[in-house]
Length: 112
Image (cartoon, rainbow, N blue to C red; front, side):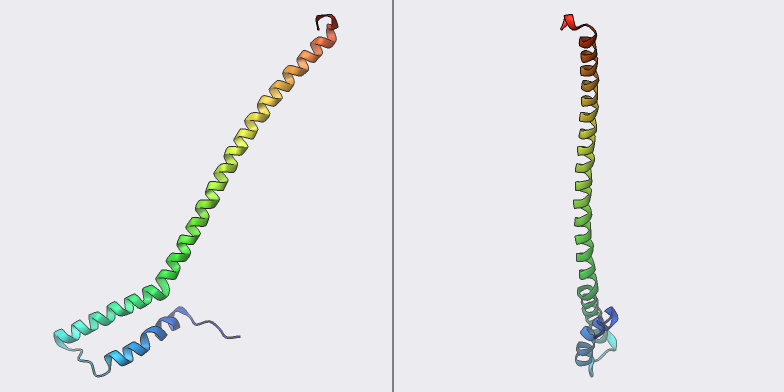
């Protein structure tokens, strides 16, 4: 089983061929060299962004979406629990009322 390449190896594999072809015999001194070096630095930054940053950003966004979904579900469950607790309290109160009424009827059957 082959080990997947590291991030550094992926970046190097992306950059190396272009660097070798593009900088072979290139003038790197003076204003022309400065421009050439700046262009390569921009290209390297873009390669790193596409190789590393974009996948991490996509993973982060997907994780944030999952967290949002789970937060929404948790809030719904919390609200449902509060509703169920409120209903339980009302039902327990009603049971107590009915039990008191039943006791009263049993104690005084002629009032029923």
